[in-house]
Length: 141
Image (cartoon, rainbow, N blue to C red; front, side, top):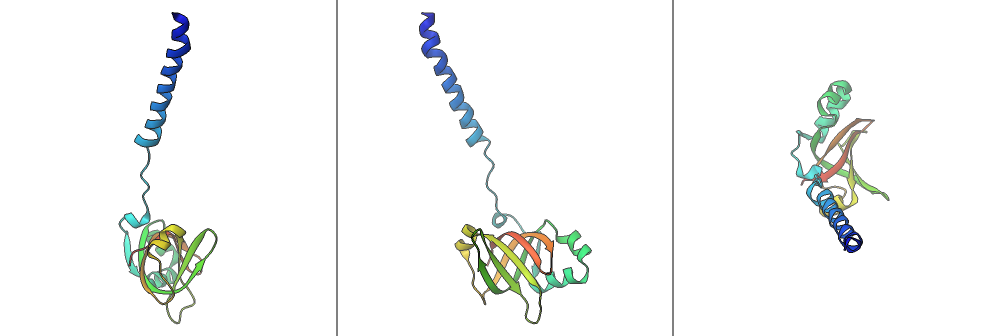
């Protein structure tokens, strides 16, 4: 009798425990995939205003915008498609700098934009390196 218990019941109990463990780990405690598109913007600004804020005083602008979700409205200058992501460049006429917005390919293809379009783009501000950098962007329209 004990041989049957050890042979069938104990492995069955271990198998059921493993199934319950993986169910709880992957379905109950699974983090929801939140994107920038689903979150409220901390700031909504025109592209020229955001750029001029960084050009006037980068430290003050970093204190205000860095690692915050910023929604920028402006005109698309060009779109660059690379292997890993898509970069949309929003530039004001007569300016050499602009807003560089980095998109995941899936996110961009959902609502896309092309050169000359007026868009609202929401992303996480990563700072200023000749251009204001927004990452993990989503087109708001």
